[in-house]
Length: 320
Image (cartoon, rainbow, N blue to C red; front, side, top):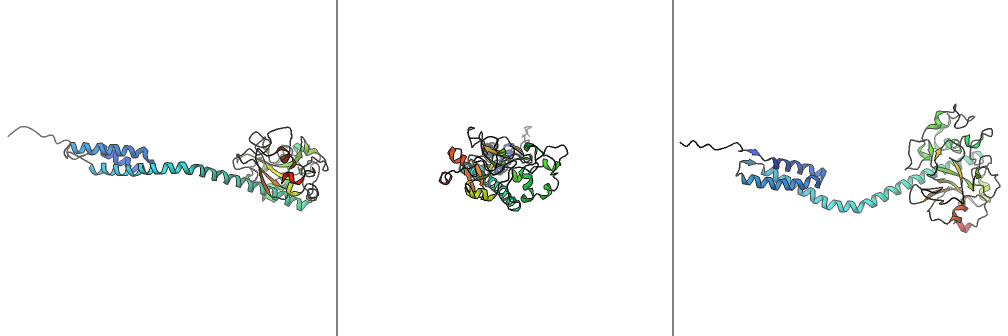
């Protein structure tokens, strides 16, 4: 009898390449071609290796499964990627429109609160009536609007005798109000991105009510809806605008919450402008009749300036 021995050490073993091909093929449904292509390559290598061993290695089925699964996922990638590339701009545009609409809705809510306040009190005012406190230290118009924005809970905790920055003032003024923030603004800061129109020019919030450059929200004067109706008209007078320029506390009187358009400071609209800047659509304007318009950065300067005076005697056709 011959002493020759047959090496049986590899009989019945599963090919490592076949196993990895199978695992890559299964995972390719989550990773797509990242593991799909390796599954195909390893699958073919494994089948060739199994065939060469004349049955000493197993795993042909695993390799074939890896090839099929990898092929399906790779084909899916080839089909899906162009579709994703085509749909991505549309998805981004839809998201931008949704944010813009949310911002418009929030600004409109502020405008409605202003009109409701005027209806209840008989006037608009730029700050809380605190004549013994400097305008920039007074409580802002938004404090007075809190009950009309369904934030009575905050309003009830505010000390109306103290300025917004008084050390003894309520911590309620330090909370963030989503109603006063553009969707792209930081939502955890006690700021406002919506501003009341004080008029046309520098320091216009201190003007007298009958000044032709005066807007709607003044520090020490009361403006009525009838004044606006008898002047340029509610449909032609801006009440609330959005901005990303020099944001400040929503509770603060003065520049953080009411400001005018400074004619000599350009651009008027955009990321570096006095108003707007949150998106390419320009700035949102809520008029005194609470209708909404959007003005683009290329808006004619005279047209935009005309929005800021309540009785500037501009021709109505200029801003239609």
